[in-house]
Image (tube, rainbow, N blue to C red; front, side, top):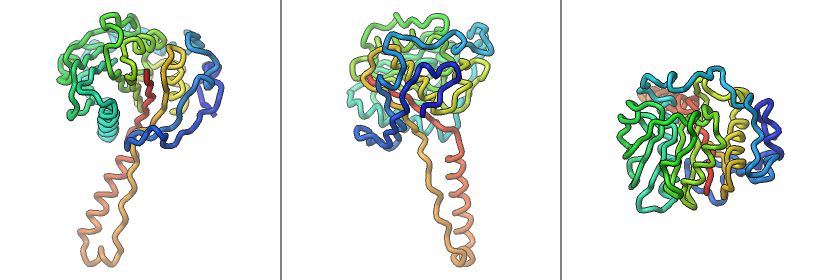
Length: 287
């Protein structure tokens, strides 16, 4: 069943339909958890079930203060970053475009975009000018606090093929307006990729996010899509591929050649570190 934040359960109705690996989804890094249809939600597009309490935060001070100093750090570990970039590459390739126009919402000094893709405009909207200027993948950027001004009127309708948001959807206090704008500026067939892990600035995340587990958080983001606009499809994915542990060499072989044991321990340790690292989830909307 759907596990949602206390106080926001009225936004959802039906249990999730687990999809395994969907028929339409053959990409290696796109393990489908479930898809969402209109009947999975209590309301229809245009409704809004969330209250100010659901979107309240422990720290309601203006975000420009919090993000005033640049943070040239990564907010997910190397394994999650690698999984995200690999997922992007497969999703972008599947769009089959000569050049992709990409909008990176809540952008920073790095966008994790794959290098072997031909891009047109890559635009970042974020909070810190120094971070955005340092992002070599952006062709243009805007400093904008989306929690004060969620309007993206600087972009015309049908401007982008892809909209990304990496580990920041949990901080949005005006998600309805932002998801409506995302739908407006995406081209038909374009994709929105909202990704999150289990790391966050707890004082800046909305209340219902802090009260939810991973499945609840996937459902919250899916509901943002559902209530904001008529999206063609909504899907939740787990893109962090777990690797199998390498087979241990027989003891007799290790005794003959101790380097085999050392090599196995090194490989097994690396796999375990990857599998125990940050998870990486995506909620994908197709216009």
